[in-house]
Length: 96
Image (cartoon, rainbow, N blue to C red; front, side, top):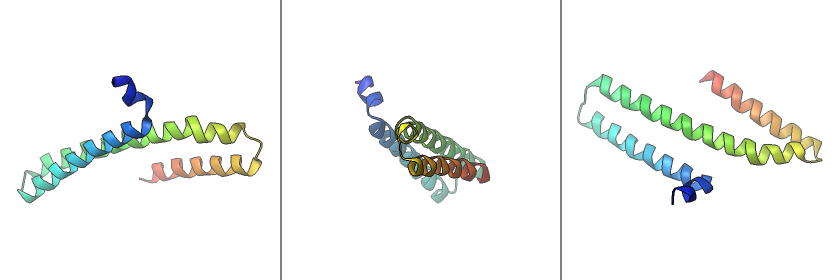
């Protein structure tokens, strides 16, 4: 069963996102119940870290599939487009 989760990246991503969703609902509940601010901030930081991991996994999958295919292909415009796209993603990540 564990191998099934690893063999389908989309399922793994959805599972991780649903975990984040549940965590976010917990934070909403904490705010509604006027929980201690630092506790709320720590939970938000945990959510941000989890989303960062999801984003990294999605990027890894993209690099191992779409980007490799484009780079190995004969379409120069497609190679340039994909490389530009990756550069833009990295540029955005440094601005956050």
